Image (cartoon, rainbow, N blue to C red):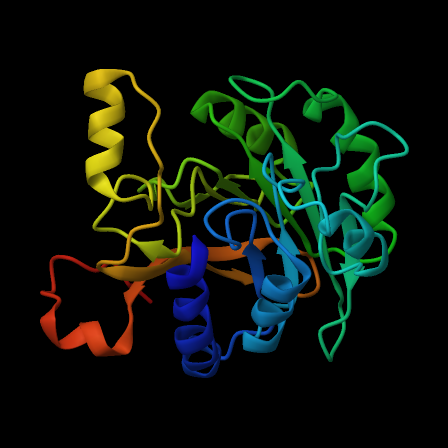
Length: 266
């Protein structure tokens, strides 16, 4: 979420990769540029910090310069279920320095969201195609409705390594591994300022609700966290062995955060 979120990634991601010996990092970056959308410069900033792949969502086209960039940068994905002919791609297979490679799929829900192709029908063929290249497949399900996220994850159980939801900016507490071996979390939360309303300054949002008048929703600045999930996957089968929620403050904030405020378990 905006500059505070990018700062958290720059500062914390290299440390967390080293601490937990992380092989591969997927970052949903659709709010990276000013709180909405992504630009070539902000994408480059996240790649330099250690992101291997960037996913997106309904704000992917907010900055016009991303249209040409997404055609040439295969590590930046847009939702799979855009119509044929849309710039960019919705999935990819990415090397990580040792076999197997990691396939990442970005798909977007339709409940309370812009109308795209049906994610349930379009993703099945894509998963079958990716399985020819690797057993390790990670899905970013960018959606508003919890039921839609859970339903697609249940449908894909046993066929992909993980389904992690994005979009609602509120980290959920339902991390689990389904019977078929697919790790699941309804929403990874968001990396950025949590003394806020979904990353925006509090006062204008309250004023919008109380007066119904237009407001400028600037990105907030306080209590910055990096949030997500740490997933352990068997390299041979592609089955998930565990999933852990991650919620870590910036280093300069850690001395002032009590043990009850941060979720970080291994």
